[in-house]
Image (cartoon, rainbow, N blue to C red):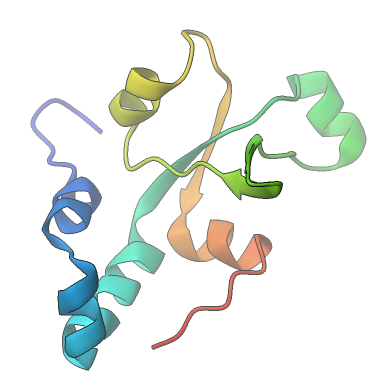
Length: 107
């Protein structure tokens, strides 16, 4: 993303509310489609060599109440605000990342 680009996913997330999503199926569908189409940045903890050896990447997860949560970011800048400098990351569409996490998406 260049400096002239906007972070549309971040804008969408900032404008979304649980009440709006629960009460309007059209908004919920639009949000889901936008999330699936967005470019997502995800921290990874393996080196390139480890990734090649494993045949893929392993995503970083943090445990909250003994449940692993994978952190997803809407831009490199957002990732950099939260993670340590030099954190490795993967970038792919929301569709690619979320389907690999076995997340059930409801439309």
